[in-house]
Length: 137
Image (cartoon, rainbow, N blue to C red; front, side, top):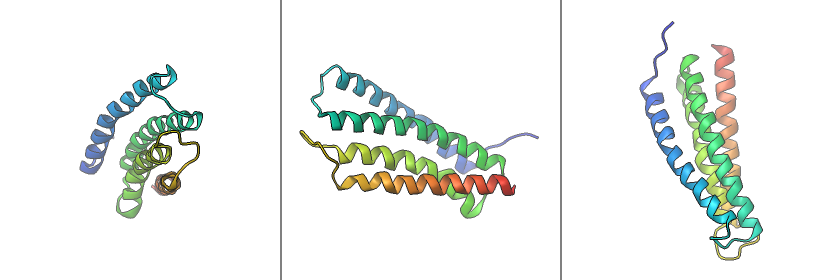
């Protein structure tokens, strides 16, 4: 059996791989935070770490999910949710951590924390779609 990417998966994987450069920049930014070069409250430091970690893990999981979707031959709604759900969570969840802690001296999350929960729903939808699709294939 020879594996071939679908065009959608090839595009999504390419964009996800390119996005890793932004995660690398985030890692550099975290080194500036821990050295004290960027003034932040402990709350903001923790949310910066959480955002960075979620971005890296979810992009990696999203790339694996793309492979599973293609290997299982998923199409239709399951295929789309399986390919995009986890990658969308890789944008939404870190974005929620970063945006909800933005602002000088912030010690609690603002309304942008809702993005974290929307991202969690996206992650669940993507993972469930992949799991069901792989089991059914």
